[in-house]
Each structure stands twice: as structure tokens, then as C-alpha cells.
Image (tube, rainbow, N blue to C red):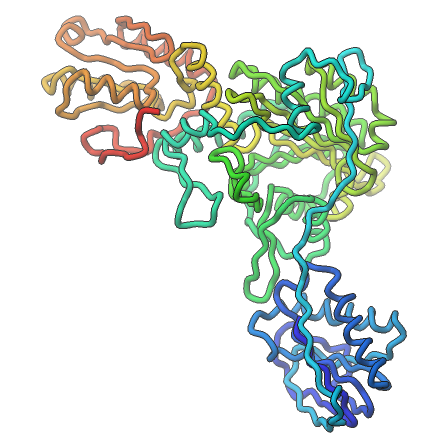
Length: 611
């Protein structure tokens, strides 16, 4: 905020014509004063970020008012002290609150209208303090410091001091070491992140730090996992509606700003055409903005709304991990509306079970951080015990004060990765505040409007974190002496056909068409390379099934197939192999190859390399 303070013997102004579409109509269009401090004020674009800026500006103005003994203060909007202007909405709001703050301190305050071209006449007293300028800079928004306490909830249902607990579960011990004792393992690059980079998940150097790009193999994996996330939420057995929305929301909307402040994390904020916007950090804003317009009955509940939302969080540069901790990522975000807390708790258990089911499909298990408010811990301890009983292992309980977040329980499900570090993947929360904040309502059986309780969940985690878990699982296989691989459904190239010479290329095309028309990602290595080179390249790309076509296969109308995961090589009739593919694919989604199916049509892809 820039301020020019003039102690005026005489001052008058008159509004001539509108200058902006957003302008004040309820402030006097002309006025005349004597012995007044005229505060010419330019509100700058970042001033809204710091609520203390109004109090600090008011203190400066009042101090000058008291020093020179003026009769009153006139706040005069003046856009010419800076080129970094706030949005009109922000400027008007800040000027009004500045006036209120001055009045609270006993200063008589007048205001000139914002958004108008005005003429003014000024006679300055001319004494040494008659002209002063001040710059009030916003202080950096700091994350709210929350006093937390930690407990261990064991399978016996008892709460224990984490400093005195006997850690028999290595997963829990690793989690507590990081979260409570703040003991970090030596920094090493996660093997899962190395594998992701090998397949084309890369930092985009032409963007802000923490933003990724997705090369063809990576894009295919991301696409199929995105489709899978939709399939997972539909398997909950409740009605779910898929929507799409924008990625930025106006901080002048009170609900948006309140939710951003309560979120308690680092956010991206931008200015655009006079508005201050926050880049969304999940799908909350868009889904809530839609839901507030719906007419919902108690008969419709529970019901969900889902979007794979491009999301933005301003993570510190030193915390960034490829595929895991990002500034821009994709969140398959589901919000479930429930009638009340009891229904939310019941649906929460359903969500929890689905979260564990998805991890177990990959052979993984979770250890939980259960963040709860003090009141929820006291009143709902039996619910927490049920969660732990279902987990089959103790949980770390983090207790926070009441009424500082929008949730009463927020559970973070962590794997312990191949480097021994906890990595949060899935989550769910029970939200008791945002329905009222955003005006979301349903009509109960008595015709009374009520605010639903909202469950937030990412059942498989963000797409990138789920993919990180896929590759970390491959790293665990490698550590056990097995061949690292992805599940068949997530492999970027599911089947590669290798004709042992060009004379068998027509037959290879016939096999290709039979497989491709069923939706599988299949290609043909038609390059003029040795068989050994083709086999090695299929291994580098983690091709799940490699199909060989040679003289014997053409003569017997068979195919020879090598499976990457087991290393077993067998000969099949084509129809037999298609049945195997169907069983292996199961009910997982399919997506296109995303590249030419002939390797001769592809350039050398630099991201593909041996790791």
C-alpha cells in the first residue's frame, strides 16, 4: 500500500465521470474540508494477503493526524502511486476496512468514492510535516502454527505416549520417527522416482519448479490411472456424478477465501484482470460451487461428486520429489454428501475399506496418521478404535484444537517406500464446515433445510502419487531379486510383437490387428535390428508380454510369448493368448497406445534408458 499524506488547510473534490465498471455509488460524490489530513492511497495487488496491513496503515495515518492536530482524515483513492494495482474489489474492501479501523481509534473519517474520475482543489499548510509518504508492505503469509499433541492408539484400544511406546511394528516406528521425533533418514533419490523418470515423468524446466511434463509412456500411464480412479469411486456403491471445472477461484468470494485460509497449506495466488485468484489445491471449490445450486433431498444422500482436478500447492523447492511432492498435480477428488455425522462416519468406514483394498491389490499396506480435533477424540474414541481394528495395526493420533480447521477427522494413509520413508498416498476427511460456508443444503424428511456433512477423499491418492506407489512396488520387487514390472493394465506397452525377420511382418500385422481391436496397447518392432537388440529394448520399456513370430509360428499358426514378470516363455494359439489377456486385464480400464504402432515410425526416445 502506498500512502501520500497531505495536511491540507483547504481541500475539495468532485466526481466527474465513472472510471471503472466496479465503483462506489454510496460515498459522497463531492465534499469540502478544512484542516484535514488527505490520505492519497494506492492499494496494491498483494495487500489483501496480509490482514495486518490495514491495522498498520491506520496506525501510521492516526499518528500523523494526532501529530499535526488535524480535525479529520479523508481517504482518497489514488491509483498513481504504484503500477501494481489491486483489483477494484480488493481496493474497495481494504479502503472501507481502513476507514472502519481509523474510526475505531477515535479518528473522524471521510472517504472519496473509488472508481471515478475526480477533480480536486488543494491548499497545503506548508509546514515541515505537511507532506509525508509511507509504504506499507504486506508481510508474507505464514502458515498457521497449530499446537499438536501426539498419541499412539494400539490394537488393544488404549492410548499411549509415543515417547514411551514399545514399537513392534516397523511401519509405525518409521512413521513416528518422522512425524513425532522429526528424525529424517538420509536424503536419497527414491528408486520409484528414478523409474518414473525412465518412463518420461520429468520436471518441466521451462515452467516453475515442481511442475512435471509427461512424455508418451508417462502420458499413457497417467491416462489409464485417471480412468481407473473413476472406476474406483463408482465401486463404492453410492451415486457419483463426474464434473469438470476451472482451476482458479476468486479470493473476493468469502467462502473461497475462508476455505483457503483454513486449508493451512502453501497456495498459488495470481492476479488476473483486476481479480485476486487462488489456484485450486483440490476439487473442493468447483464441486462446492456446483453443489450449492443443486436441489437435494435427503433421499438423494449419500451421493458423491468427482473430478480429476489439476491442483496446485506451493511446495518448498527443497521438498520437491518427482512424482510425489509437486507444485502441480492431478487429484482424483471425491466429495460425498451425507446427512449427518453418524452417516459420515459410516460412509467413512466404507471409504477406508476401499482405500486399503486398492493398496492390497498392489501388495501394499498402509499405516495411518489420524488427525483429529480434541473434541472428536473425546467423543468418538470408539470410532477411532474401529478404524485401527480394521487397519490391523496401531495408528499415530495427532490431536489439534477444536474449530481451527473445517474437518473433525483427517486421515493420511502412508506406505513405507523402498527407501524406508513414509509416503502419504490416500486420504479421507470428515468436513463439518464447508457446506454452510458455501451454502450447500439438502431438505430433510420434515421439509427443513440442513447442511450436509461432507467427506473428502482421494481413494488412490493423487494420480502421480499412486503411480509413484506402482513404481515403488517395482523397486521392492527388484530388491527381492525379482524383475521390476508394472501391472499389466498399467504397463504403457502391454504387448510387443517381434517378427524375427521382415518376411514375417505381414503375419505380425495380422496378429497385431487381432489384439489391438480388443483395446490392448500393442505395437510391432519392425526395425532392421538384431533379435537380441529388439529383445533388449522390449526389456528397457518393461513390455509385459513379448510375442515372437518366426517360421515355426507361421507354420503352426501359433505365437511364442514371454512374460516379463515371470520370465516364462510359452507357445499359444492366438485365441488362447487373447483369453489370457482378458483374464489379466480383468475389469481394469483400457486406453490407446498413444504412439505409432510401428517402432520404425518413432524417433529415439531419450527418456527410455536402463536405470
